[in-house]
Length: 48
Image (cartoon, rainbow, N blue to C red; front, side, top):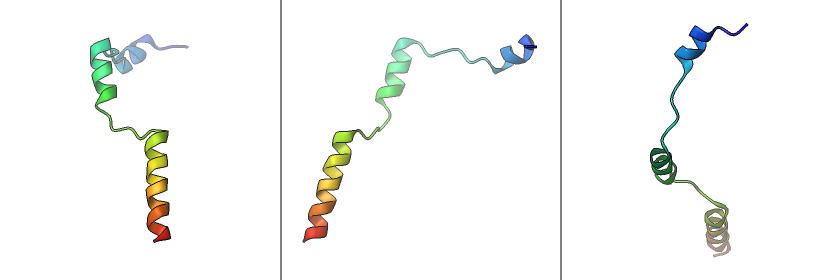
């Protein structure tokens, strides 16, 4: 059975849209283009 009192203790309100957007954009995330640039640079250094 679900213990609602325990579940309420675990509850954290979700971020507002503006706060969530800021939290997402402030993270330094590596995308595929960044990975490809790094691979190309590393392969050029290895070929020298």
